[in-house]
Amino acid sequence: MRVLKIINLKGARDYIPILRLQHRLVSARREGTLGTDVVLILEHKPVFTLGHNGGWENLLVSYEFLQKRGIQVVRTERGGDITYHGPGQVIAYPIIDLRAAHLRVTAYVEALEEVMIRTAADLGVQAGRSPLNHGVWVGNRKLGSIGIAIRHGITFHGLALNVSLSLEPFSWILPCGLPDIAMTSLKEAGAVDSDMEDIKENMGAHLHDILDMPVKIQEDGKFHGISIPVGI
Image (spheres, rainbow, N blue to C red):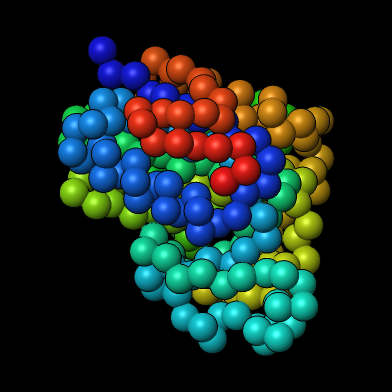
């Protein structure tokens, strides 16, 4: 039986160590030393990330401006353009063997969108898809983003759902490289609650239902020989 192992990483995490952890998990999954699919669920410390389609022209402020605020800009291999991550935004990074799961890429992306739509609905917020861009929206405001990468049939990167984070940093970029796009959060959209741990738990339940895979949740620790310390 296929099992989806969810690793709940508490506290806001630096981006680059988590990116390196994803790379290690992808390699272990490919080599067979990691026998289950994995989802990392966490929050990031403030960071801007550029996907492989990302253009520096979509960053609207200077490096000096960001340095004063302690915010990095990191180029990654995921799809999409520029986005912002920060505390108050729930991140899910699935490391899934798509071939073993019998999932096509389009169906997988739709599954990630559905996870965010259902998670928003748990809190009384009606979100949906838009032809403008992948992700989920509340009216004409973007609530959650998707940017994935696939290596040897194994996914990494994933989704970012805005819960209660400050939206100001999105004004320093053209989100997803699109002009005139406004971002929103569950809190701004009137969510009845915004407890991050409850939202992570709900997201895990929706991953189970949508991907039709039993879920096991693990906190920080050692996983298949890969150390995941509290202070990563």
